[in-house]
Image (cartoon, rainbow, N blue to C red):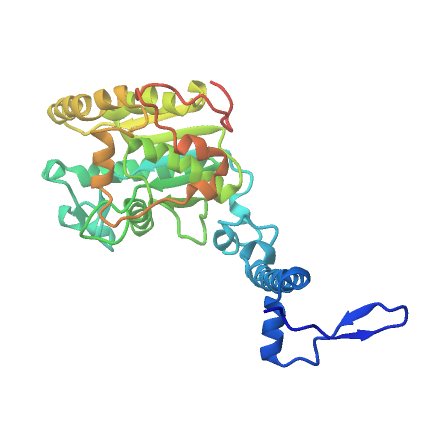
Length: 337
């Protein structure tokens, strides 16, 4: 059976125009199913409807996306950028000397009389009964002295949240200790001090403190001074400095002795076996056993934000050579040694 004829209005010149308005929905459906000359019309109408729908959806998602609302912010970092003040603190400008005091424990005291009491510190078992609080005080005191005497120095107490028994960090507790004991002037008199609270080992103490310096001041230091245990000197001078390719003449390590020769010898032996030797074969601490030790201290499952705070160090932050010894070959803000 042949399909029903399709009606046309006649225009002058005999050209017919398809009349869709005079058909019911049912007849219109039949019209779309008609073969030959009507097949193209059906395809055209359906294609137009699909294109219109896609256009509406594209405009909706595009106008609602974060990147179109703020073209100046990196797509994945807008929440960080928006939280930063427009201007850096005036005290942070023009500084070029980074003074690092790595943390070794968390002080949970509040008063000066708690400073050297072991119960006011969260100590590891090997630190107890060895006058470690007195030594930690000497670290904080010397670092504070160096920073206050140099108007271009920024003092950073570095150390993460390394205890399951406290939500505070080593770095924060050291700064609180310095204020409570008067080793640093009050906050309204001395502002060239901050904390770095993500480091989980000595390599991160160095690298993360450099990143924190950049985050706060907007620039990188030209000199670094580190205050720590005397028995750890070689680890910092020969391994950590080498790993980040920091110039030797602009790197100073101030070692503080433990006070007992026997304690010093025992600590040196432990340093060689548990730190210097492993780091010698794994300069960036990203393989076993150093990586496991780092993760084992991260009780609170925290992570750093220095990819945003120090973007020039992104590649170095992620560098992990398979052999553990290949020195980072990329460009660094402080140039070549």
